[in-house]
Length: 135
Image (tube, rainbow, N blue to C red; front, side, top):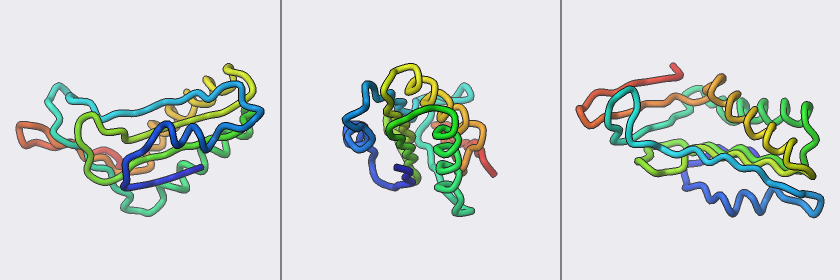
């Protein structure tokens, strides 16, 4: 399950979609909007997909994971739009027979997402300034 969405992400729903009867583990990572960044208080973070390639970037990460680990299921979900502090912006769930594969694959997905940065990220701070990544 690879998803770019403007709707809130439900971790429980995603876990239920990736687990199988052969799964002994579902490792998850839930990324949240925090209240500070670059030494400033965050008001909001806006993610956009101006090139329309974000889903393909997430599919690429999932393919790399499937080639490296034996997984039962994988989900990578990224929420775009304007998000507030505490909102879930990114979720990875990896189901496998054993925890080692799930943990390693989930860590890889998060690291690759940060590396590829498939979306544009605009942070807005309380002082009115902004910071943009992914242009």
